[in-house]
Length: 176
Image 1 (cartoon, rainbow, N blue to C red):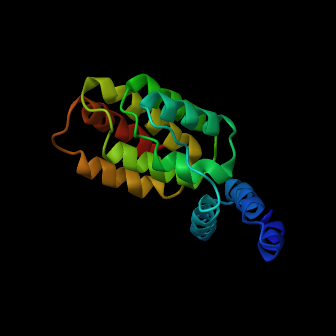
Image 2: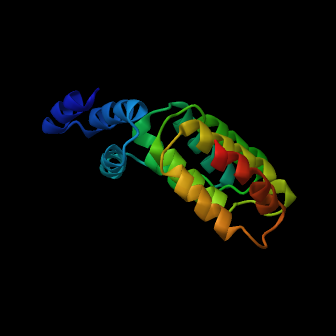
């Protein structure tokens, strides 16, 4: 595990390296205590990094995509804070795609929130909901089972087409 090396990095004040090493450990052992360390380090590192910016929506999207393309775990706090700020289906799908393939509990947490309150209502939002659900399953965060049970309870009745699609796919997730 990378935890001893992460501790060394913390002793020297290198929080960014420590975050990467703790994330590598989480991939091997998805424990709640490791998740808590990742979240704390992420908040600390985010204070030293600029968020993606821009005055116009198109500029914000370009900055978000450029930052996400770097795949630097230190930037993820800012990326997730603005994940659903663009309500266009294609742009949200692109953002989600850039986050795919990362075993990171911070992404799982953001996706739990997205699933609880889909950012794009109606039938148009179904793609983002299904993509987020597939990503949650792939990440394998142990907290996801309880989070998805909560999402199922919240979306048991009502909601638009996106929540209907979500409800229809949750049983698959819970048995996985």
